[in-house]
Image (tube, rainbow, N blue to C red; front, side, top):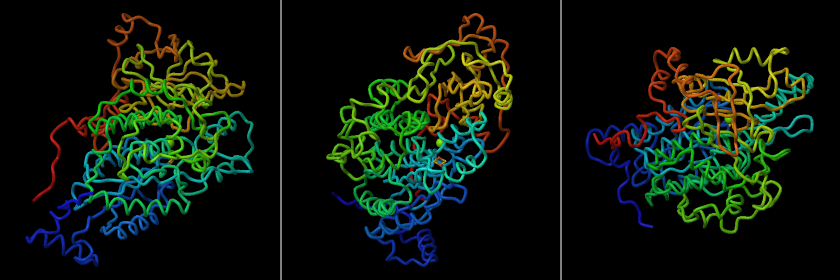
Length: 575
Ligand code: FES
Ligand code: MG
């Protein structure tokens, strides 16, 4: 492999001029001398760590292991911490800040003398955010996933992040669970560093990063606290230095075919619905047209093989998936659906990487002829209620609601919805369709994960555990139920969802991919004429910028001005 002749960092560090003198003297201020950097790729370790992100607790130590690898390969490592988005704690929604982090990553790479980057992320939005930024910056980049936490455990029972929290919360509301058990669940459901260990957004997105080719093979499923994770960190450090010499950049890896591979993998995993938004945004940043229809088409072809909660009746967790062979084993099973000639960060093709990959547990990673769900982890629905589309996860809901029509009960905000949900005498049956609106990208704001609307307590007490729910919000990847999400356009900008009234009949037909409110166009037009927009959510600051520029869910919720085609690339600082 030819070695890159001139490093990007040399523009800062190699010249005999006053500015370079300043740069060098300030690097010497940190105790380094020319031996540390001369002729060596500068590797930025973008560490997505803070004390409020429990999923990335181990990143302080892992950054040192990445540095070890960089030094071994003859690079000069420097750690650049980034804004960290602790999904479970941040309000109102981590999606609000995904683009904020993406901009930070892009601009930090651009502004500093950096030849290659190791991106450390994993907690939900951090993966797409860091990849979005690196995609636009387009310097050699490798992604180190945080890895899932150990499986949850309380009183001898296995617990899955999110999924079991939702499940036992419903049981508690139904009055079937006592305080000591509830306390044990709280202490046992997240018991180590690492990301949610169900097939939530975190593992969906790190697996997608691996399928696209942006991680080393097998990286996505290594438990965060395993020694193997430390070794993977060092390996990333070693490899990124080589990637700089090979000038292997994201634009050479992130082809349209690589994104289609990622969608196929996501479907076989029974992915989080959030994947749709992030993959569309990332593919478009990489310059490829990928949209909802690609998801729906591939979803019809690729069965769900990963028997990981929340898919499957009593299924496994990421730790089991790792022991079963992880993503290479899963990808080997869906080879007929993959474009194997795609290049990955180790310089080899996807096909070469999964050659000989074995599965060690056929119940965790099912063979093609024995899937968890035969077709379609996700379905994209369209109709007068969602002209630009909406999504549902048929693999994680009761099949009773695949075709359903019933009267709407409509809520304009979460507090009024909550009042009904908690009312033991609420006028609601399982035939009703609950509608929550103004929870989209602009309305939420930031499209919070309110889409898995809890079951009304009245129905829980009757033993009911599912019903049709519709919103312009998202839901956690660990959620389940007959929840229609991402309705576009959202109600806040005047989408038809804003015009529905309590009592209107709504019909959803998942096999036919349709969603309708059964009122005619003339009546919709009358209601539209009378519709009044709500006041903007923010009057200043980042939130204001976000609501001015955020695109709708079907377009990946990127900012309009961050799209690649928005304008000429920013170019390289050279002054
Ligand atoms: Fe961090 Fe789920 S809260 S991955
Ligand atoms: Mg989540």
